[in-house]
Image (tube, helix red, strand yellow):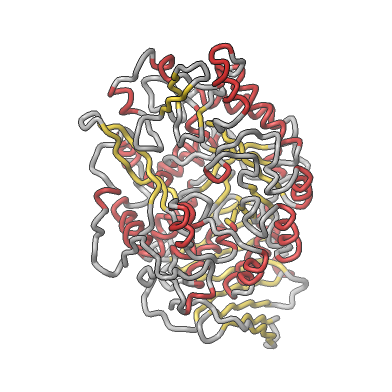
Length: 630
């Protein structure tokens, strides 16, 4: 009963005085007070454009990012803009086929209900310590209790794109380790693994067999003959409908072993040849791959680039219905043979993920990162709160991933966020290089890019401000769904400009590889210690096994979210103007009263004090000075 429970206050407040109400101008981080962050100094080599939101500059290159060229999807977006928040909530609460209730039940036969509603970590096989053995040793030794699930980004033999050009799902890249290492991780953590539904590497045995034998190959129908699909070449009107990820048609010309040339569908780069999962060899390849991962301990399989798997002339060749539902049902049968669930990775307008969630599938909340940045910048949580009320419950919440922060995922939320305000946040606050999607312009006979994702660590997106960062994580942990923290975010890592300059890829700004020593050093930062405390609270409180509600009728800058499970409850009260939060939660033994935890983070005082309700406090001093820009 409530009278027998104590109340926990987890309150974060600054010691140093803020010189801005919300954000400081975005700054480069070098050998200054920020040097405690990771990764290291810029060494004077930074060439990326960083523009202050306080400068009054609207951005010289904004027109190239937010083009006036008509997007084929604009009609749909305009229709969404006529939908108010009440109608959006109707999608969840009163639809004929509402979202599944998010009940966590280890005894359930549904693998998605067996997942722990606790913090997951996302990383590559060599992100921490260099391989899978080192990763497990680090997690077991240093973050026990803070991490319950593990998302392994591609660990298979690959020819490019950071593992996302797999040769096979039957083997582990020897650089990372073995299947035994994977099984050892799966024995300790809810394991999520990758499967690319859309493509495989040209170095794969299947593609090499096709190059050698052509139409006589058993894998002929695994790949998509461009000219056969279109009956020749596509028209300008057909090309205009397609969304692609490169500034040219999604096609590649390959040299067959007999000297002939063949055009094949290729959505991404030359190391990622599209496959057709709707053919017999395509489906067999996918089912064999899923079964391979299921037998190795995967509780959840992430279907990467899932939306691109459907190709039909006269459509945008992205998430075509009803084909996607037939495909998912077939894949789900193979996954459930090993009690494995599916997670659909789709960067698209929010309605697409709502459709998936209503069918019972797990999705990502890719809208949250930019909605939070919007709330912090404009001191209003109204749009954020509206989204938390209508968003899927069966979702993985993120602030950061191996990719950038998605524009597509938020741009469809017209009634929830202003696109003009969003562009201010992205252009003036982040200033980081975008990944683009492309559309064909029949007037110029060329492809025109529009922002798809923005590359930045989340700690850098918040100016390296520990207080703002922990507020963002607290809101993420109370958002409906299972929270996932990217490994760079776990360490409060800053943008790695040197990696970008070395590789030439903007995505590497958020893919710093940590040695074991670097990772242990990062854990000593007060902001990371506090984050781990929040993770442990999120993992252990029984309220998060229940249902979530978002309070209405508050002041615009206030947000209140409550999780309830029987007599257990946990409430987050956040202020995006004062940039502070507190957590009130049932817990403790007897009716002794209050247990108060207060974190003070600043350049002068990096301590954590705990009061047990009788006025006595015990302090824990952190000797390393905090990176604090307030």
